[in-house]
Structure formats: C-alpha cells, structure tokens
Image 1 (cartoon, rainbow, N blue to C red):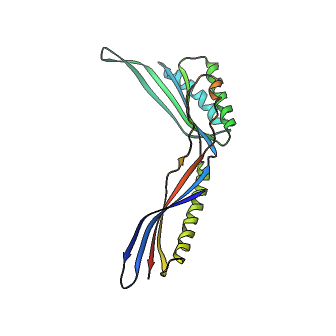
Image 2 (cartoon, rainbow, N blue to C red):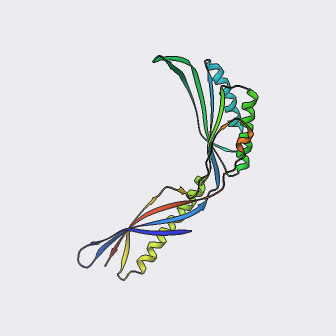
Image 3 (cartoon, helix red, strand yellow):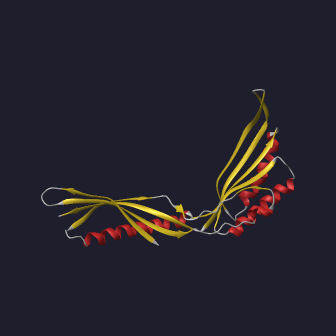
Length: 223
C-alpha cells in the first residue's frame, strides 16, 4: 500500500519565459515485519574477577557456537560496584555484563535458543548470575528494508518522468534528491522480562506491519 504527499511547491522565474519548478513529495509503503528481535543481557556479580569471567565465558562460548539465531552487537563490560553508607563510598565487588542483540525470522528458534540459555543459568543455581530479555518485537530486516527502499527510489524516478510529460509546458527534470526516512511501526508488542524460567517465553508477540517513507525533492526546468 502506497500513499503520496506534496509539500514545498515553489515556482522560480528564470530568464525570458523559462522557469524552474521545485517541490517535495513523500512516498509511503507498508510492509510486514519479517524478523523477531530482542536484546539479551547476562550479568554476574562477585568480588572475584576470575569467577565473573569464568561464568561469562561459559555463556559466551554457547552463544557464539549456536547458529540458530543471528547475534549482533555483542559486548562485555566489567565494572566495580559500590554502596554508600554515611555518605561514604564502599567497594562491594565487580559486575560483569554480557549483552547481545538477537534476531531471527522464526520465533520458535528464538524461543528454543532462550530456553537453552535459561537452562544453563538454572543449572548454575547461583543468585548472582542473572538473565534478562527486553523488547521482544517484530521488525523489518535490513535486507527487506533495503529491497523496498530501492524499489521506492525507482518508483519516485518513474513518477516524476510521467508527471513532467503531463505538464502544460515543456519541462525537463533538472535534479532529483532522495532521502530515505525512518521506518515506524503501526503496531508494537514489547515486553521486558527478568528471565528466571521457561514460562517467561510463553507470550508470543503478534506480527505486525511497518511503514517506510521516502522523501524526494524534485527540480524541473520549464519553458
């Protein structure tokens, strides 16, 4: 589904009887989300750095070896922790945090992957090891987004050619400036969960659609 919007319609007089016609036009397209996405965080608290690194590396090895879901933006941070008593800062230990962005076209694969992660955590039986998952939602994959943006660029070029042919004066397309806009969701289904059991994965987000926009500036020379 596509819709169009005109704005900034300007006629610029030029020499003799010629003139320039400049305006903006927005192209919209609605596409169905094709990937489910979430962010995974694993945190470990301890006074011993070696203990933290051991537990984090155990999770990291499993995550990197698994090929069922796409992993992006993996990072690890180790920070000292403190508490305050009588306005005095006291060192309490360290906190290691491992984060990943996860993506897959199949919710079942994400569910299976997270179930395995939960089992690993539960088998450790440690209160200072925590898992959290946030913002489970359907998104448009980069590949699908790029494909549709390319098609919309072609449509925007074809449109101005047809438009110029139907003008009362003879007009040539002098310049086309195309700026892709942000995609936005018509419907979002998010949840933020501290992962402690398999039951946390029972709520399946509904697949929805997103709208993407292409803003185009046209400049025509007419006479």
